[in-house]
Length: 406
Image (tube, rainbow, N blue to C red; front, side, top):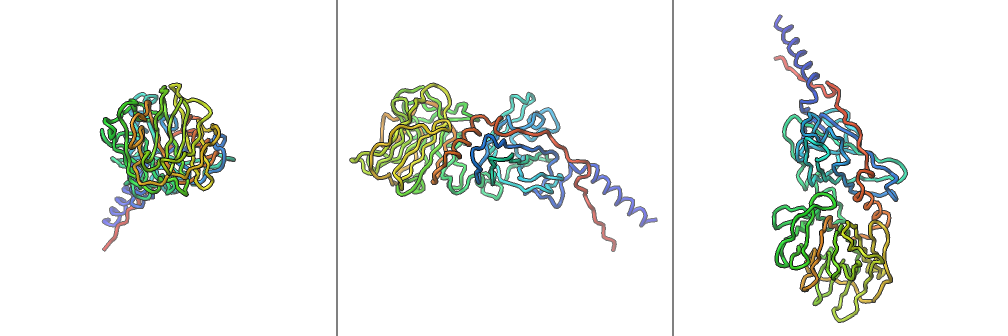
């Protein structure tokens, strides 16, 4: 009789595990935090928005790329406010414990749920190993833990720093970490100090998420000086989003000053100016954009300085946009700080406008990378389409209980 009761009890416990599987964490969870995820959806990147197959591409996802039920704070299917329970994989999860999922890194800059899903906001970056231009690329979001969850540590395998590969030397989403600091998302720790010129820029609405609004008078941001940012015998690619109506001359992102050479992505006479100078007494080599950009609209600006070929390329909104290359001086190589919104050692070059998403790389970004990145950031809803919310079947992760008899 006793043995019969024990087996009956064991059966009941197993049945409970089957019935409540989505709410119970498996002891053998595949997700890095060993917590179950009750819901998932696919996110399909549209190959028509990808101009060449790209490797190790960090996809931007915003609120428009997630189903309403995931963002609606009134629904059980919503993820946690702040997005601590969200995880991504390159393969479809088949059970709450992450079975079937190949987990990939993510950076949650923000994820704010709302009882009105249209008012929810999100900014998440996810690296895709191979982004196809000939067929859809699908990634999977999973969420919905039984308790409170947090994102992986930023320096862990699936943490934010692993979204950005070694070619990225600085990535600033221009969100305030504090009133005086903006964070670098890479593992180089090139965090920005606000207010170095005289006062800090003001946090404002950005192209997506928050940005920094510079007054054109006396505010700026400094980051540490690193040899990775030098252009001498190297390549430096800089990508930013700006919004301005200013007609003056100002540095947007620069390194160095007149006394020791400099590299600068600037605005002058309403056009983009990219220049580099090793010897302050010599002529810089530089290039202007063909078009003006001081129209009060958001523009994606990318500059590529290649010192080996003595070339500069300027892209505006994903397309090559430039005038004749001028000058022949060597590329700047210095230990000065990288500045945003002004130039170190100089006055009268303060930027008047809003600056968002500053990325510096030490490789030559291709035209197809630049155009694809613009497609992604300018119209994320067209770039990636979310699928319906999927709930794991009851009992998809049986909770097996082993009873030892002695």
